Image 1 (cartoon, helix red, strand yellow):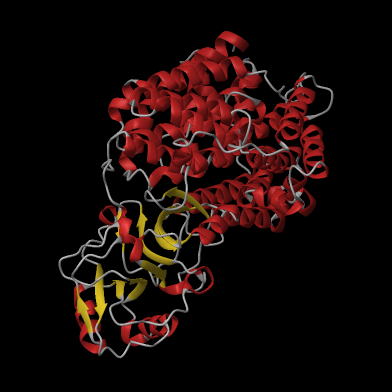
Image 2 (cartoon, rainbow, N blue to C red):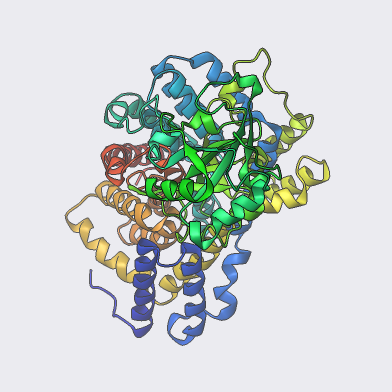
Length: 629
């Protein structure tokens, strides 16, 4: 079959796609900003792209976009009930000490939950709980966190509302002659097959391939290589710091003369070289205290050895050389160490320690940042990126705020710090559910039921569910808006017009015509598998949303040209877009476990590569068996 002629408009659209792909891969600018840039370019170049300004912004009014916004809100309403936390507590009780049961329960619970509500909050809740349980059982958390992310992704294939790519694919299905949107459970049998095969892989081969990067007994200070950067200094009787407010001392240490020193904690009743009873000791977070410094107080500082020696000489301080500072030493009733991940839509992205006001407004000190394989201690000038894992010295109130605001996802708190799910599991009673739980569950069930029966479109059912959640008090308007990952929404709304431009300029037809030639030597089933593999590869690099927007029109066009079923090809693209297992940037839950698991980039290829190939084969056969080709 001859290729259609290449037009100027087609070349312009392909050039925009190439630039977008480069920006998506390099992340020179955030992906949602790239998408908005594409949107603007399409409208400005209307004479070439055939996308009018009104069409360029139509992604914001797309039923898929609105549905995704509503589903974020509905997920938040379910999250507020405490059901996910309760599941975690029960998981902790029934699996304690057994790695196989813990892995199986983690995969099963996460996957089923992710089929109903957004998987990001599920993973955010489970990370600290799984980390704590693993360490108590003497298991490396790394053995469980990557399967946790993969299970969340697999769970998204179970229902239409499981992930945004499913909802987006449903919108593309409307363009196929003779059918409308995808029904709620239309592809669930294939999703169940993929989930079961994926779970079996994670329990066997994946379990063997997943590395144990984090030692089960690792102290947070050791994990971040701080043993030589934390010191204790005793305030001598003749020190010039005696009688000064801790806040004033902190300000002096923050000055240019001591820019390489952070005063973290002031401990009273420590006893210097001798040990004092724990009940006699009192510790203050230096950034949250207005106490006066007294002789005998012990200052815990983060600094190099040279800076510590200089500080001691200048201010009449004496080092406690025998004592190493551990994570437990920094955990008190008022303050704690914590490990947390910067979420993709966090306000911290693009900020520095100073511009984010973490120290001044939230009494929080960033001790180190883990970015991929790189551990950074000189953090003052570092610009935060999504996926950065931060070691914080902070307060419980600040952590609560960070989690509620979606700024950070808490991944670990040392024993004795902020209460986590595994601590609750030791008690006699599980934390009570919200009184609104029956109402919220009934609303969510109603949304699913109404949409499944086809009584109203999914977008109307979801919006109605949000309305019901708010008017019944299950969700406040502010919490509803805060629950939305607006970067995903803008990414989706920005790239949707790109698919429109590909179709109008003949770009999708041109690519399809090229792929049609493969049908000369391959059966339709093999071409279907080719689309599955290609889309999955793109999803690992340019995000699932962008890959499904680019590949869906091409898949539908190709299927029509070779006499195959366009819906089967669309399903292949949809399932493949949810299988970005091979990179930490492919999906946000992969990014969330990257730092806490201590993984390297190659770990994702080693564990996720075989899984992606396995599911490509199973998914292709499953689609063929249920829908034909």
